[in-house]
Image (cartoon, rainbow, N blue to C red):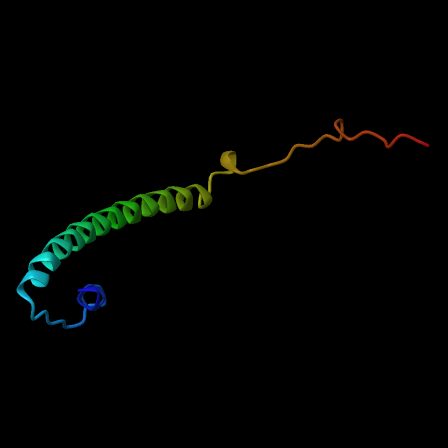
Length: 85
């Protein structure tokens, strides 16, 4: 049965000759299929969210309006002289 589980998860052909082992394996196979569908759904959802974030960040970086430019208006007032020792 372990060989069949390994081969099934590697998408390789497997053969189970014992009907009792085949019945037990069917429960595992159903769980693997259900988990695979859940995993693929989650991956698609995460991929869509990542694309939304990427497009949102890309549009922020590509702004051409000068009012949105990142500027540092450091007047030097926050710079203090180092204390003399």
